[in-house]
Length: 459
Image 1 (tube, rainbow, N blue to C red):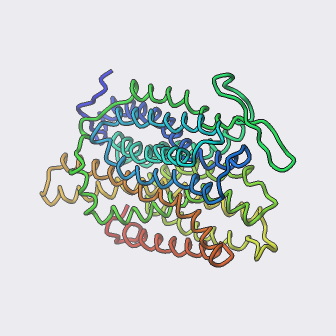
Image 2 (image 1 turned 180 degrees about the vertical axis):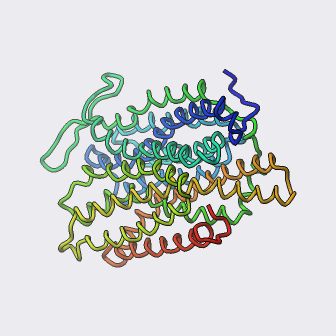
Image 3 (image 1 turned 90 degrees about the vertical axis):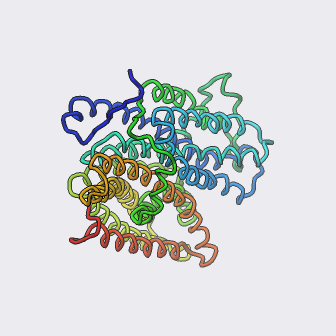
């Protein structure tokens, strides 16, 4: 198989049906499990850190919070750089390399948690390395956007991201199960004694890291031997940096912060929020359901956007999110009294589903906005039609990656806003009101620039 494809014209219907679709689909289905593993590694500390005090680690509550939070910070920051890597290195090479890099935090975590004397500095470094998983999203989405025509980008990007996002719920579901047994035998190390009050049991917390290792290796090999690099996708950082001068790059950053930033932030903060507001409820039993629903809703959002328009779907998503946050506020207890967990949980499930739909629709909007913009340049005689298409594809891919980087900071700031709100006001209500105001801003921006009848970049 020729790993480098010199000619790639997905907008040519004859080329797409005869050649392009099969190649693009193969690259997509290799990309999806690689991205799922990346999300799993990115979020693994959110589950593992809960057990550290019970197996002998003497970290303060604040130290534990930072271990759970820093993967979001490093992942979001790495996404900024990963956004531009595919046109520089090639999608096949970069996917294989970035997937292989996940072995460092996976194996490192597996060894570190077996010794309660492991220094906090080492643990912080490992948590930071988990950010490799967060960074992979930007490069993965940029890569897949090169392969598909305008009419199918929403569905393809929705599948890649939505099924990739399943890594969040997968890690929250798999880790509590896999640490209960010594599945790796002598290779996996000895069990730790988990103690809480009078209760004690044997666990293998190292499995939280080791369980992903064989899958990472297989996924790396699949990417190296099964994916392609596109010659037409080549671009230097200087070529791509023009997106920082594009107004729509920054508007879409805000919209995607509202959708994906909310998704990853709610996923990271839901267990802690539930425990603080409903102490009698075990959040671990329910934590994976919301991210699962949001991940599954994303391909639907992309597909629906392809059918009726991305801006319409995004508008619906933000209006629904505003209503759902009001619902969360309604079902919260007041000064520890009253409240209804099931109403609270239902509203959060609605939030996860709506963020997933919005994730899919916003990523459909980006390539369409930039394709339409460059087609106008061609109509004005500024560039040729083929050059306009290439420029639009490269800029759209870079914007997809950069908006993903910008939005990933929601994974840190949403849980942090809960804690700040509680410490300053004694309640999370202030944080939730802040979310509502931000979603109102997103709704207004989307309507003005993309959804209304005479919008500047209707899509």
